[in-house]
Every structure is written in structure tokens, then in C-alpha cells.
Image (cartoon, rainbow, N blue to C red):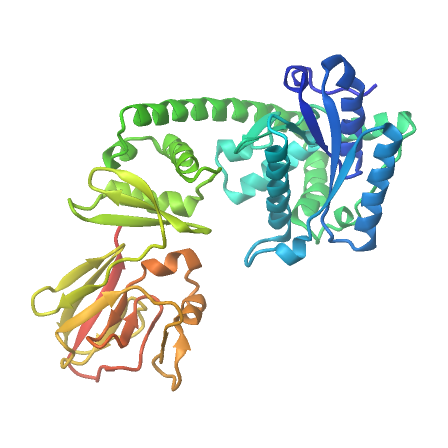
Length: 452
């Protein structure tokens, strides 16, 4: 009656298996199917219920229902409270926070029980939804097919034995067996989560217009997963070759096809950081620019990592490394009489005399001809303030960066132009201060541009 993927047997055999058990139809089907095959495949089965705490009494009732069901089936059950809203990070969606917290708990369970296997109840419909969600996000082939039968995140191994089974078959099988399950009311509102809108409105409309869409999408997923597997294997071969040859020079990275570069960078960062790290498109673009035009001998270029202020990529003439510690570009002295331009991190600043100022470009600032010839350039300091042009009181630089929509992990790469006494004149792309405003006649223009 209950069936799972035929390939699951070899992975389940002799293991301690944790089954994610929400109480919904998918996880109930999976739990009962695993119980049915636990004896012939000689594995121990335990249920894990995550109480996200998002639906008040309904969440608590779900947890209690799961406890009772597992007790009736003779399956050990652990309920883990997540308190998602309390632990949600700034600029993190509620679903992303829930995924992160669940993964943290799976890692803790694995640490306490090395060699265990985590079974999840995602089905064929979930896989189709995931494809569209990832497509709208701009994912590559690996991302589009991230919901796979077997996957590993860090040391935790996940198995999804129901990916070939539809939601309809799951519920029909449960009903035939006389089973009931919990319904999550938050899944019934299209406007609550994007996945709901996809599941309740967009995909049914597609099925209505294109009756063969479900089978066609399923075949496409299989084909794209095959392509992704080839790219991942090729990238791993390239990465192992670079490790074997101890060659991580910018030229080696630059020679990789972009389809391989993003994957090799993922393997490289994950190994260096000791945890799974998936570079996003912005990081990939910054890294590509850095290795395409590496700095000269004795210099380096920093590529910061999103959501990790304790590590950064350092691109030098002969190698690329991951370094730890807060990124602190050393302060530079800039003598305008001796040098018309200077490079600071990922920026070039250039000074020139002009007949009159033309305002409007946030990466250009105008100063009187009496501007001191010796200036300083550094990064911001914690808690530092300045009085912006047009204001009368100091403002935290942190707020000015935020108002300019500069992401937190990029802020320490922005040059802060200062007078010899460290007073702030200007932060390109952010704000200039009230100090030394230009008149209407001849003045000095300083322009900043990001290096490609």
C-alpha cells in the first residue's frame, strides 16, 4: 500500500533514520512507509517534529497530535521548538528563517548521532513548485533541481523517498488506509506565502491551459538534473586538480567556464570555511571582476562574503585565499600634488580641477581650490559620525550607509575621504560632509569609480 523509492533501501539499511514529521499528509505517509520497511532493511526509525511557533494554539495542537500518533505507532518522537519569529534575522524572510533553524537542529541531531540519515516527505508536487520558485529567483541548473532524492549539507545526509509520488496518490492512499492527518491553515491563503500562491493559483492555471504540463515539467526536471550532475562532476574534477596542483592563481580561476567557476568557488569556499557556503550571483560577479584583472605584485583585492563578516576572499597576483578577521583596509595618505589618482580597495579616486561644479553624481564631490594637498583615505570606524551637507547635527555613518542602501557586508570596502585631522569630507556613493563646500567658480572635483 505505502511505497517509497526503490533506491532508498541501500541508504536506509542499518542506519538510524530521523523522519521529519509535521503531521501533514506527506510526512505521515513517509513515516508509515518507513515503519513498514524498517524491519527488512534493519534500521531504527525516530520521528522529529519542529514546532515553529507561528500559529499559536494550532502549532501546539499539531505537536501534541504528532506525539500521540507516534505513541500509537510505537515510534519514538522528539518535538523541537524553533521560536522562528524571535530568532529571525534582519532582512530574512520567515520561510528562510525557518529553513535555517531546522537545518541547525538537524546538524545538532547529527552531531549527537553520527552516521544518521534524515528522511523528508517532499513529493513530486513539491519538486515542481521548487523548480518554479528557484526559476523566479534566477537559479542555475543545480539550484533548479536542488530538491533531490539524496543530498548532503555539511555532514548531514538527507533522503527524499517520495519525489516520484504525487500529492494526490499520497492522500488517496492514506484515506484508503483510514488515516487522518493535520492541516496547516497557513497553507490555505495564497497571499501569505509565495509558495501558496504558486500552489493554489499559478500551477493549477498552468495545468488547466496545458494539460500535459505536469508530465512535461517532470521530464524537464530529470533532464536538467542530469545536466547539473554533469556540471557538478566536472567542477569537482577541476577543483581537485587545482587542489592537487596547489594552483589557485587568478589566471586559473579566470580560465574556468562560468558554469564551472560558480561551482568550483562553492567547493572552495565550503572547504575553506568548514561549512556549506553557496555564493550568490553578486559575490560571483565581484569575484569574476577581481580575478579578471588581478592586482600587481605586492597588492591585493578584497572580495567580501555576504552574511560572514569574519572571512573574506583575498585576490593577489599569484593566488586566491580565504582569510579570517574583519576586513580592514589600511589607511592611505594621498598627496594631490604628487598623484592625481589613487586606488583604495575596489575603488579608484581621481582629482582634477574644473571651471565650475556640476552636482548630481553621488560618486563625484567638489571642493574649493584651497583643499589641503594631503588627504587621508580609510574605511569607516565603528560608531563614527559626520555632519552631512545640508544638516546641522552629526549622523552615524551606519545610518548614512543604510539610507544609501549599501549592504552591511559591503560597507567596509567604501573609501572615506578625510582631512589630515581625520575629519570626514566625503564617502563616495553615500554622502559628503558640510566641510569645505565648493563655490560656484573653479574648484577641485574628486571622482570615484568602482574597478571592474
